[in-house]
Amino acid sequence: MLQSAFAGFLGGVTAEMDITQKSISAAKVILTGFVVVFSMLLLLILIIKLYSKIISTAQKSGKKKLEKIDEPVKISDGSKSAVFAPSADDDDDEIPEEVVAVIAAAVASLYGTGAKPKIRSIKKSGGGRSAWANAGVLNNTRPF
Amino acid sequence: MEIINGFLDAVYGIFQGSGLMTLNYQNYIMIAVSVFLLYLAIKKQYEPLLLLPIAFGMMLVNLYPAIMEPPSVQLLTAEQCQAMSIDTAGHAQRIMSDGTVLYENPVYGGLLYYLYQGVKLGIYPPLIFLGIGCMTDFGPLISNPKSLILGAAAQIGIFVTFTGAIFLGFSESQSGAIAIIGGADGPTAIFVTTKLAPELLGSIAIAAYSYMALVPIIQPPIMKLLTTKKERAVVMEQLRPVSKLEKIMFPVIVVILISIFLPDAAPLVGMLMLGNLFKESGVVDRIAKAAQNELMNIITIFLGVTVGATAKGSTFLTFDTIKIIVLGLIAFSMGTAFGVLFGKIMYKLTGGNVNPLIGSAGVSAVPMAARVSQRVGQQENPGNFLLMHAMGPNVAGVIGSAVAAGVLLNVIPH
Image (cartoon, rainbow over all chains, first blue to last red; front, side, top):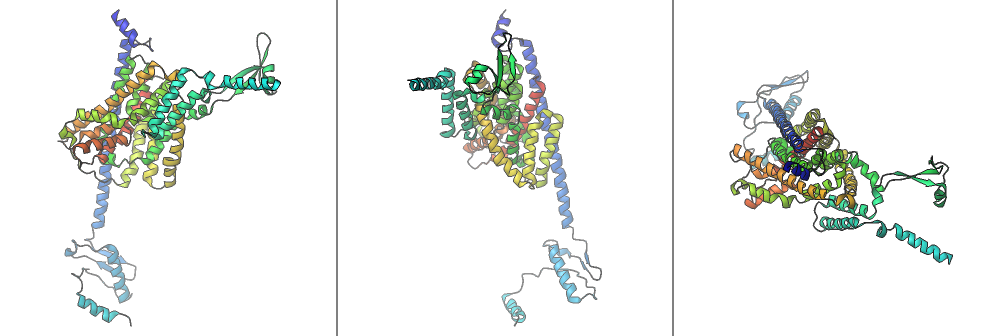
């Protein structure tokens, strides 16, 4: 009696559903919602972590490849070639590949196509010329 | 004399057709409510982009209900047609049992009825999601994927509120539509309601948008109640930078995963991720700009005005609306509470590295909920910047509420 009165109060719109049916429906929605939402988002977490790892590993190995200039770099255009092997002390302060290419090209153009110059090492000059030396170079090289 | 009679007849006719004779007291109450909402939108600036068109639509439909009327057919006698200067030539006829011939005269629907079809057919909410996708940066979520847990936790409020609604006498489908208010996501709430309980659209949309506007008022007390001073003061370490490739892959992976497992969520998640791919790919700048500016603004106008226009006095001013508003508040508060509680669990599990305040941002309401986390965090520690950390759960909440919507549409018969 009491239960039916209670059900009547609660079931204003849906008279066809009794308390048991409502409880079953609510439990079904809560359980499904909880499990599906969490499992979908947990799956997403796993996938994001996985692909982030793959991408960062791939990018790291790509970087390493760029850094790998311990091996001699051979620049060849068929007639002339230049081999560049950086010395061990260059590791700390690397010379960019583009600069090496420019130096190699300058060397090749200076010695002509007949000679086969080899660049054994490229080193940055210490602190550069002193102000007096610079003045001397400028004096000797300035076009007149 | 004839002129004066004609004049009086005309004035009487205008008076008979005026709102003074056709509107009832419910319409006038709703007009007052809409004026109050306009005040909140303009003076208090509570979500004005949405509240203003909603309030105006509400006002229009209560001033002139025919603006939302569907097209219909009027049956007229030959004399009536003549009186109304209607040519009966092309009109279909109906012969009644007493031999009277009636002519079918089509009556076109109201302006807002036609614009409302975009809501009714579930077109506008996914298009709004397209624009949101263009404006969303999933970077914080990708760099800290664990925040997806907080985005999921904040959806628990939806399912718990479903129980409350069903025991308060709503049907299963109505309960599902009411519960989605807890997702704190307007387009999702409208999308689900049009499918599950279109008759409640006005009340649910207005409740959902009102609570989203009230995020800065509703959330802080719950956040403070559930956390200690020490927890609120936690400074989180900086997020790692996310590469462009990761950001491009994210929408593609999410849409494949969610659409395969939960096809009902595909329209919302699909459009969200399409918009995000527009943004992250960097190759369709023009489309991305159109989606997040022109398209989004146009749809916002249509959506706001027509949703407001569903709030006719006779359907809105019922006891059910009060129940929906109370249940919506419960859903919203529970979402916030569960987000913070899961934030506390993460705080414990990570040895105090996660600030539980970011959990409350798991309810969607982007970016307001994240701003609230930031503000409450700064009250404890002015040098603490939680915004980017809170954006992770915040955007996770958008995905989470779309998934929850998919679950409701799947589980509840409609």
